[in-house]
Image 1 (cartoon, rainbow, N blue to C red):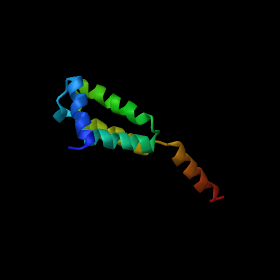
Image 2 (cartoon, rainbow, N blue to C red):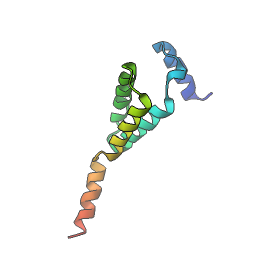
Image 3 (spheres, rainbow, N blue to C red):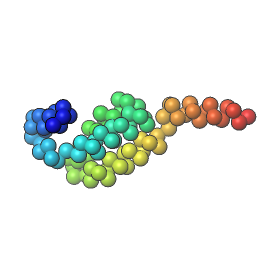
Length: 91
């Protein structure tokens, strides 16, 4: 067992949640996509949003995929800057 597994088990116990019900890879992949595609502080906020939706019966995997797609298509400042630099050389 690694440190993440131990943490998930301990935190799930405190929250009264079965650790087997936590899609760790899905949450981590979503957080990565948001942190890299949008803004780093958006990652934990989006993970929380996913958790709220899960508590309301949402399809976690499907919603995580939609949110990841949204993040990867998000016009981040880095992407906008790259596009502007690319456009500058075409005049």
